[in-house]
Image (cartoon, rainbow, N blue to C red; front, side, top):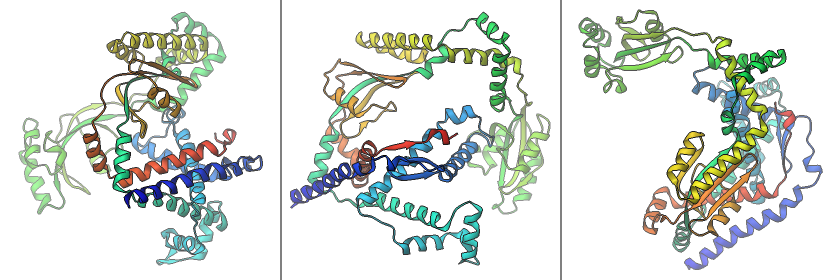
Length: 491
């Protein structure tokens, strides 16, 4: 019975996969690739509109702004974080999920769409759906009811496609087979060499910088680059402080804080903080908050910490958290970046970008040195080279036929096939675009079957395998459906 079930499950999934390949040819014609002026990505006829891209872009920018201290991001930071690239990838995957839902004959009914919209709180007045508010808010955001309802329908369809894989049943023999297959692992040493990482190591002489800056057009480029990055060069005012917190939930919190203030001084502050503070993180470090800039603390706290002199202990300060006794121990004034301090450094960077031939030679030289070190099994030298050039290096990374590469260094499917076709000691170099991955196949043992089984069971077999099937199906779609990104519309 278990064997029959396993066959049925396998046949069902194989049938779906074959269906993807056949149906995908319906979406490769010229008509499906034509983009309207507000279409920024076309995924086999599933369009990403400019408004959808902008919405996702704004969300990502706000997220990164929060984790970088609330400041606006520079164009360099946006590129460094790969924000646009990640957004494009995420939006393409969303549209592929819709194709997946179509192939599985899933749909979003009119009743489901209506119910979802009526549940959205921002369309309600006095907790009731308000049709006039609905139309007004859509109009204010440049959306028609038809467009918005289609977006909601797509969201429901995508969720259904994802949920489908949470409930795929697996028989015990099938689980055993998958675990055995997962244990088919090669252990490799990996180094990733990227041209963009090596650019800063292209040599530039002092007289080259001087000659470069003599031309007004070049000097203007450097000045513009400085203005663009100014926000990251300026250093904000910072203080170092400690505090003792008496929570507002504590009985007679204000009295307790005032009584403690009468006892505290510079020499016993850390000791009393460990004994009395109700900030859990302060129990072990004497109430230390370390160094921080404005915007990190609540306004009432921040006002006192920045305004009082170094060495001062404040009277209890009330905030939403309770009463704080604040001890300011150090201050750093704000520093406004001076163009002259960064001019040569920025000029050097621009010159390095122009030295394409030198970068190409450096790339070849670094690859040659790493490959030679691998051939000599000199892993210490490989590690040293990776450190010297800030390259990603992973010693003894697991490459699995089931999971692919579990390392942070990505290897293509064809690359994984080559690795599995190789014996211990084989050296493989995979070149793609402006980067290379150099892999040395080792004879190191992988995890044994018992360890792998326990680890896999702990992660939840059904969910893990369901996600794996979903990933494989999305990959299949991506390989067989034309994707067109209108880069000129994405600034």
